[in-house]
Image 1 (cartoon, rainbow, N blue to C red):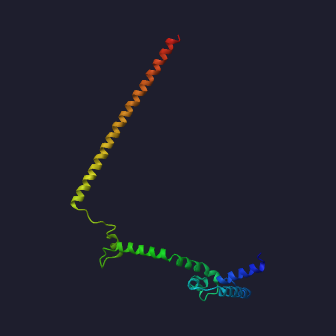
Image 2: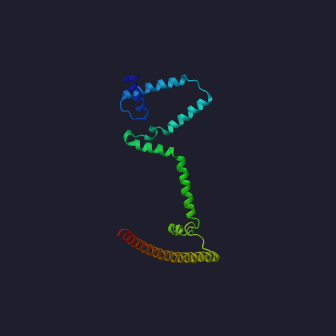
Image 3: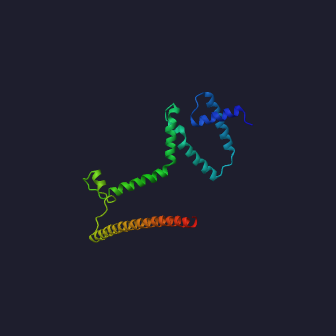
Length: 195
């Protein structure tokens, strides 16, 4: 069972580790907690692998610890967002490196055809990715043939749609007349059967 004193010690140690404590009592409690932890760590058997891991974790701790980013500033409360942002950037360094390489490739692609005296706007406007090579005469003829074929197909589709509309209109007229004549015949048959 955890007592309030144990919780106080743990909270003070946590505050000391992030640099967010303000009273001397917290300093003494934190240093006592730190000494206890160090004593426990000294008692652990150290192999070459655990020693390497320990050194690596110390290095990471020093790099990412919030106190390392505070410098000479005493007011940690106003500095925390910047410190956490720094840690976030450090944690995403591989993705940022990849993104920066991609941006560099895009920029280089846009600047391939740059003339020495050209402005940035002219260079980007003339970039090969934005202005593909002109078509050859054969490619232009093929493209013109495709365009004419597409126009012809559209014209035939419109003619076919008009013909289909007229056929549907004729069908509707015939069905309406058939329905009217069937009803008239039905009425005459009823009159003859039921005088």
